[in-house]
Length: 260
Image (cartoon, rainbow, N blue to C red; front, side, top):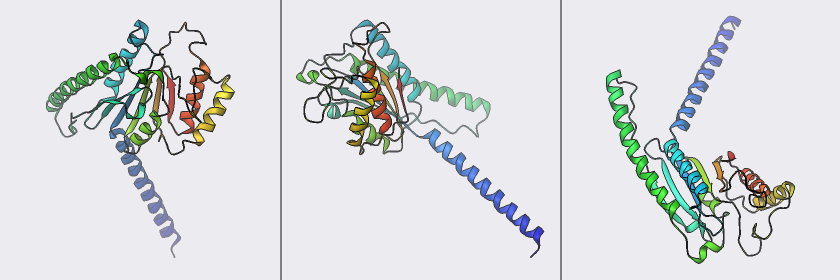
């Protein structure tokens, strides 16, 4: 067999595979970029968090404003609000889905593209205003019932896991002090018994994660918005509690866990 022919054939095959791989990667990137965003907001409605306090109200209102602007971008983007209390998993307070369709403007001339962008932008901004107004309303709501006495943050985990099963890009925000406080065997009560060190927090989190492997968080992006001022003492804002949640969420497959 002609060695030159073989060499050229191999070069063609390798080049074709590389080209197909590149196209496949570009297609995957485009699919990820166009994937809808599913935003989950967990608002603490227990007696330990006062959302009417000036610092807390301002911080949480700013977070809601920014996340609506960033995450509501196209048709299919979803925003849901859950209240954190004794029965978190069944406390969905709001569910909205964006209906603004963003046109493909690649074939438009400059004038038509500008007009389409303006129209889409105005429609999208009106939807965002509706989303924000309703989310702000849920933030301001008071919980005067018995459910405010307990804090079941663990119950948010199956909600995040289920959202990740849809293929959407999941972003979860906890507007909470993250003080898990539930009675019963195998539960945690950080009011009466918080982790004594970061090492113990990691040990507890890893042990708890083994019992929750069914809640795969599928690289969800998670933000912890604690209601504490920068001057708060470590007794009020216990860093070992934050360490516990960071480790637990990472063990369950969260993509990122950041305090904001």
